[in-house]
Length: 143
Image (cartoon, rainbow, N blue to C red; front, side, top):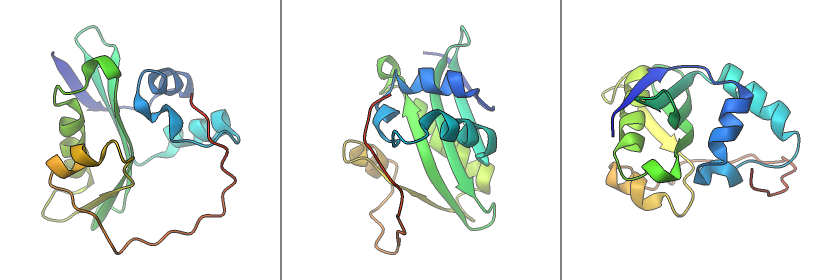
């Protein structure tokens, strides 16, 4: 499959539609979902999309970075019918380059247990130096 990756801001509606076609649709809390997705797509420092030849959205990678030392991948998804075609790997590589390159940037993510094998194939390892402060009300749901 042919696809193009580029830096692009999505509308909240397009991202929510995308979530419904991926396994990312259960990673967000129900509380103020649409409002928070609007903030996410408007402000995330690294916002990459993969689109097929027809212009349909097939992959997304969002990340936060200081552009000097680290990159935290907050969202990485590929629509179900396009998984296994290298789109996720290409998005991750492009995000790392956008943040400053593998010689400068340490990349982190919180991986769903089903995604751990994918991240390990990319060469990522389990980190023991990440701390969490979480006081967020979180009602699970699927988009």
